[in-house]
Figure (cartoon, one colour):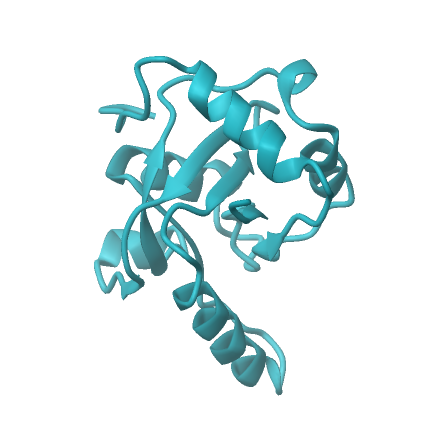
Length: 155
């Protein structure tokens, strides 16, 4: 079964508006995380996170939750790139992969419990969601959308 990940897409820098990266990601059809580090030793951890992110299988699912509490489902659709655009840096979303996002959010009541739980714990790490049925549940939601993924012109 395909892997499923939590993708908060929130900067580790609290000065960056939380919704900005999610809006950019959905608008451009990408998924990822930032580069901000604040303490010694974090550079090495960032390098490891980037390497793991680059190794994700295409077709892996990603879930994010926006500032209004809506859940969005996407699917990794291409290789890792570093986005050097000033706008990407401004929202701290520079380590990215192409991602096909569904065009409509999923209400929490329809989101797999394991996804809701992992976001409920908080945190800003991109991480795999480990639950025996998460792949099957997520695939079912993806397939039920009918018209499939679409990039949005506006967040």
